[in-house]
Image (cartoon, rainbow, N blue to C red; front, side, top):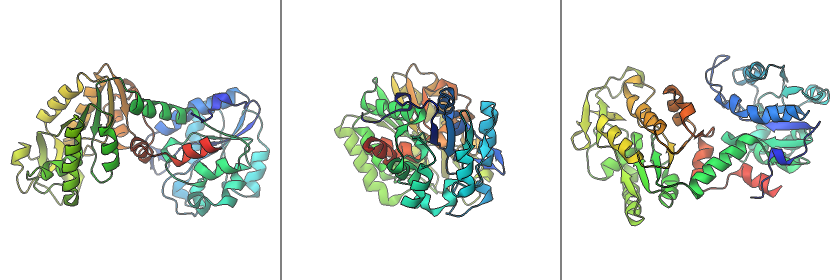
Length: 398
């Protein structure tokens, strides 16, 4: 691979422009999950150990090209400072004379956090002037933001173009190795577990995985579409009728490739369709052939969980992306939490996709039992689909 990594660069005493993914969940100014900040620590601490100083940058939330205080990176800077036990200065912006002065004043071991890149439209537009101005802050640009690696933004592509030298940080390297190794050379049997809401968002992933796995488990609301496509009623459940034919073709492709596909055999349902999810209550467990017309499927049932655990038992590699039900409501979380427990008990390489699956594993208290948890939701999906991510492409081409 033609990618350069941080430990292949001479960074001693250099000023490092470090792109991290601190797009973290906030409740006001309180961080509710600091996983992404902690995931960046090996790269940050390595740079500091070499006597480098750091200019750190990220986006946060859906800032629309203008400053918005609710998307400030100040809480992230504060948390990073606590984790490192050293000060992290907060810049008032990511551009401008005042920021340039703060960058120029940095000494070995200093850290400066730039304000949210998406406070400027140039980030998402990959504007050359925006990219050139920020790239000038560093002697070396290090990209360690896997969660945004699928976006062709300035900090993924443009900074590389205008930096004197660029490389990937340790988190990017880890994501590449685990997701790449899982796909290219897995220990077998290799089982994929796919869940979440929509088949439409995972069509490419399912098709790509069918060329690589030995078994596939499909759960979550996306399983409803497969069950309905096979001619069974799913009541008032979330389905994608326009994808019935596609679902049948995926099952046909699996048969052709001799991949066993397992769908839920029973479901936990509610008859509170129309109410907010938090107010919905379970109304029993039904086999897939007998879902009542007024019922909404919100989780896999206990028989499905036992079946899926049996399917997983001989696995040597498991890739899990997407919860088994509407786990945000504790009444419909057992399928997802049970799947986390089943993975934790395996003697296998267990790779967990980012997003909601990461939340489930942490909720189950089993994060330390997984081999690797990806920090990227959309980036993981595109990687697993077999697409080349813009961030990796840029780093290779530089």
